[in-house]
Image (cartoon, rainbow, N blue to C red; front, side, top):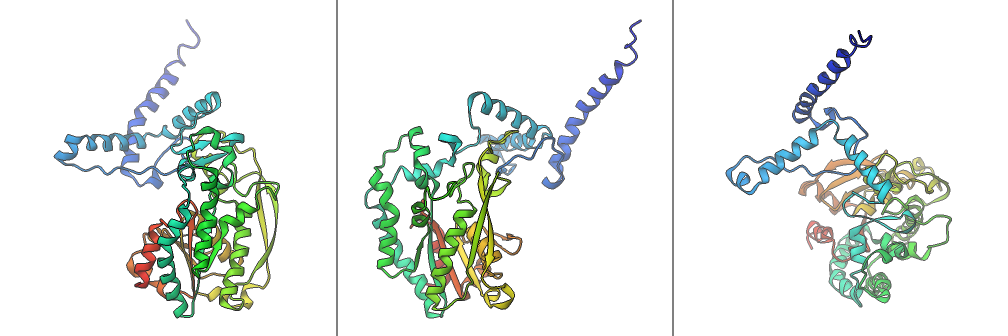
Length: 392
């Protein structure tokens, strides 16, 4: 008699029990809130837009109902995160393939979003002048509104990684624009705004001019937004511009030092995390900034200054620095105007999808900033939203 004969049914029963539980766990995941779902494996990076399940004859005929149901069932499978990472890891390690949509790999492990490359390679001669001509009347109207009320207004141009480190990517794709067209866009645009009297801080030009000055680039290898050092440099320049426009110091400046370490989270590894592999490529250094305030926040009036930024994803880092290290405790970032309101310490989302009544608060702020990335200058819908808010 086989001495293992009595023990064989036990693992079989355990396996059968586990298999029987899978549909029950999937049903649980379909029924409960995302925070209570049972998933095995590290949480996946990125956001999945869930298609609504609409019960109708039209959705059944066009197949959208079936697709939505299939998507919901797939998302609910408990082993899904584990299996996705396993598949992605094999493809990445063996073939260098990226499964994250719209993420492009360049030389030396550099990652970037496809949309930034598309914009960079579509620039044409005199595009900056054309964009400036269309946006100057809008910015002047907004600036005049705040100036008439004794408030400070600054327009900020933030940099694009594609424009800062093009040498890592241009040999990987067709880039029909000319070097001259790519290089002239921001200076041409900014100079036209300045000539028209717009209070503009050229954060893009500042960052690009500092290329090669530091041990690390001002964009992380595994991310597409500026790193902490780039943010500190631009905010330092922004504070000088604000105080110059105010004619006195209303925002206390800071000095800073930095150290280099491996990326631990946030923008330093945002695209590397989107790869959803077990071992993301994080073998690079990023700067960690140590700030020294010129004046303790308790001794000044900056913490009660009503301030706001309306901007893109590049506005998050300046907003958090201004709040935490320039004493602007009351500052709020309105992300694309209507997507969310951010602020506080620690910096976080305070409100989702602010409405008209919430945005009306922007009419009375004493410090108003609008940020646009160079990849979208003159084309952001939130500039038109600001015109509507101030009634111009």
